[in-house]
Image 1 (cartoon, helix red, strand yellow):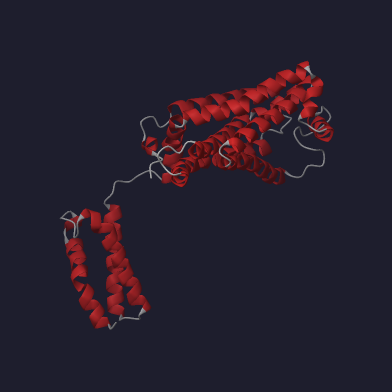
Image 2 (tube, rainbow, N blue to C red):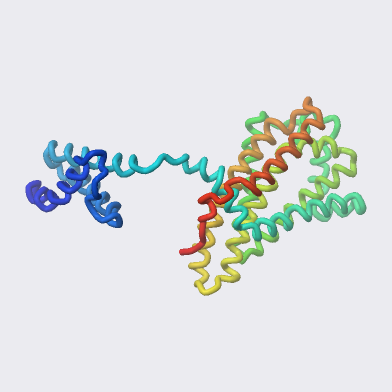
Length: 329
């Protein structure tokens, strides 16, 4: 198409944009019905792209480029300033979503945390039971890592630098979160299995070390990052259970539609879980292994962090737009 033909076919629409931009601060009526603005703006952008690709005259390209920039500034600049999306998500949307999905969250918490508590108790009553979950090699490794003669609790004697351990902790935590989330695709059975299994494994380690008298080193090590790590796993598990529930009980939808709708909610839970998992790795790498810090300080910080998370999920973002995250198609 020649430039003259192109200009003639589109000039009327460009003129409507120009007239609107020429009004004082764009406060006059919109150049097109509100429902058409986005479509018309995309067409304007397409016109600029075509003019460039076809090597039309510089004045035409400059005119369209200026029009696109001014329309974009006018449309988006006219909207009230909003907090960054990520900040709004963590300050309001995320805790509001956790409250809305409380059924899956509580179920995941029970599946992970109850086995931990039960196995810590069981290990004191039946010490040999820990070998139902831990291999002899794994148990010996834990004893070395938290023994009184280890200068850096929670690590092997030949452990690398803090930054290398940070990468390892991120890998390990992400692996667990992925297991409990992706297991939801097996109609939720996989999420249930991995939540319970990881709870039993953590409980066996904690109970075994406590019985041996290494409890101060172990509990002092995990106190700081436990809230981040365990709650992150719980939320990843809740996301997996959300997926599994959609497959087991799709309601009036097809399983495919129910899965897509549930995924829109589950992925937001997973965003929050991923952030908590990253924070857990940072604390675990740089704070938890510090033997110079008194245990009472580590316990105090750990308790304070658990309390802060509980208050955050209970009250943050009350009545916020985060409550709008829906599973409707």
